[in-house]
Length: 263
Image (cartoon, rainbow, N blue to C red; front, side, top):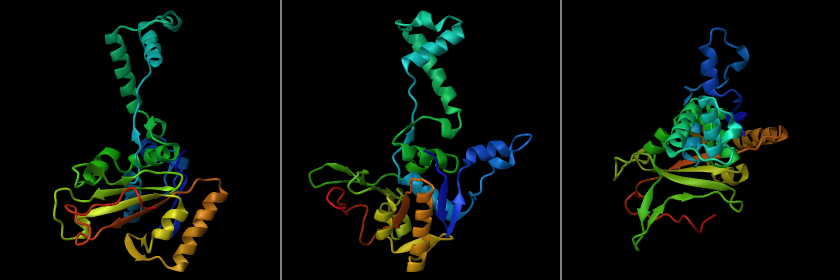
């Protein structure tokens, strides 16, 4: 899957052109006007959406070459017939070298062509987001919050996606260096991703031009219309939400989140 459209700041934006492709096209001798992104990567509202994508997903880039792929590369480099290697195993050193070469080559592909570990919808999301906001760097900056139970068990604060609840959630630390924050900006934040009907009903505010405003009936109607329009195009629609938690109530050091029994 790929990202086709996004709705934010009360507008529907075409997202079919990956930012990495846009950049490569812009740097070419003869740029193709059809490969120009319509979104603004400096728009704070757009960046908040991308950050929610990165922080609200599990998927990572991951490529592990198979033995057969390694043997095909070996045959090409050593100029031998690939058929001559059928049923044979390469020496460990050659196998390791071929797989290392394949990993390097794969890492240089466009993000949209790279292998991912995760479900199809998240693969499209992270391939889109990576060109704008690095997955590993962002997730390391805002790590998943953990706490230790009275019994000494460490709990990761996340709720995996399931067909019953139709969403997943992560509670991430917005400032790990600050263990006793005074403001919500330095405390914990919930990132929610899922079916629009499961996410939107939990929201009382919406982010417009990077400002939180009441999620009025008019604004809900606009979002619902965009949701319906995307559905008519045959697109799978996902909604994203975030909520910064008040440190006076949700303390990093003492609050024990229920990650199992609520829906």
